[in-house]
Image 1 (spheres, helix red, strand yellow):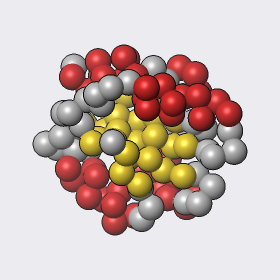
Image 2 (cartoon, one colour; image 1 turned 60 degrees about the vertical axis):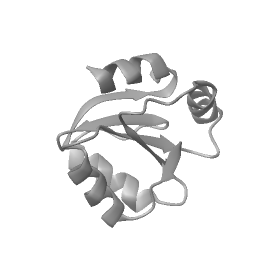
Image 3 (tube, one colour; image 1 turned 180 degrees about the vertical axis):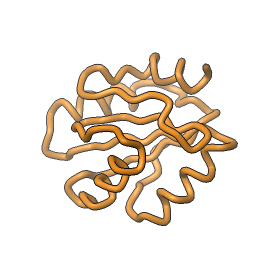
Image 4 (spheres, helix red, strand yellow; image 1 turned 30 degrees about the vertical axis):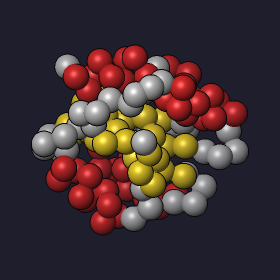
Amino acid sequence: MWTDLREATQLDRLIADSHTNPQVIFKHSTRCSISRVALSRFDRTSPMNEGAVFHLLDLLQHRPLSQSITERFGISHESPQLLVIKKGICSYHANHLEIEPEEVFAQIDG
């Protein structure tokens, strides 16, 4: 389901892979109740979209990587935050309780 995103090399690979398969990054704060709610919406959604790869970034453990994502895609940091990466660019992003699995899956398939 979720692949832990921990290193800059993983981000580089994720971006390269986005040219063949959409990539989803969920920026998650383990101290934030809204983040837990948004993440649990995906955990209750079954099955996860098979056409994409889902990455989970622990913001508290990997702040520099989160900042790299912000700089790379030009999307202001929020927590929680979800980004869909296609063909090397962020084609969709949502923050807080705007993160809805159905909308994310529509963006992946669209």
